[in-house]
Image (cartoon, rainbow, N blue to C red):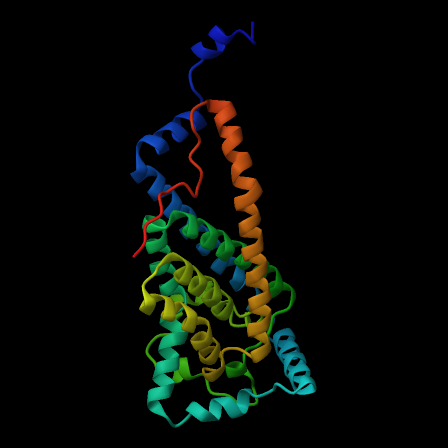
Length: 281
């Protein structure tokens, strides 16, 4: 009979069951799978993000809408703010460095540290980044916006491209870059998530100070380098807070339900994504 416990026990384990058991016995397999999953998610994000590169007219019109709205509420400060750094080589290079190196490279570095030493914080931050990125993709395709540095008026200077040797617009990465992804600013939103993860994951006062300052430094950088409007940062914050709330909801309801299902199906103790023992710097 199909419901006979002896017959069920005699069945060979399914491929999914064997993979699950192997992941529990060999942490290296689990680590490789996790890193590959995140890498694939970010590759998909950048690939999909590049699909609106031909919509320059629409992106310019939307940029004008953004600037008109900022003028209406009295926060169109970008031209005067960029004048602060133009002609000051040290400030230009400092904000170029913040804009480039304290974005995706920092996400990777902090992500690796959290993964190996702070698994719960890693899981929440990972999910918040990926979910906010998914929300942002919808907005990028629905509402492409030309950043200040690309405006045909020439009112702004793209300092990263003009004064530094690194750029997201390099020929080697152009297939993965959407030049009209100004709204929302994930540079700022992700800085809030990463900065918060650093603050909550360590007692080191210097690291916590860095985490607290990171969003403010990135906010200044995105404006001074003419890559975003001030309003972009606000939208980026809203999107990333939405991603964070969804990530916390997954911790509260989704992962426990998945763990319970695994335990019912395969038996034994299911390893939840947040189960690593906490360690503190």
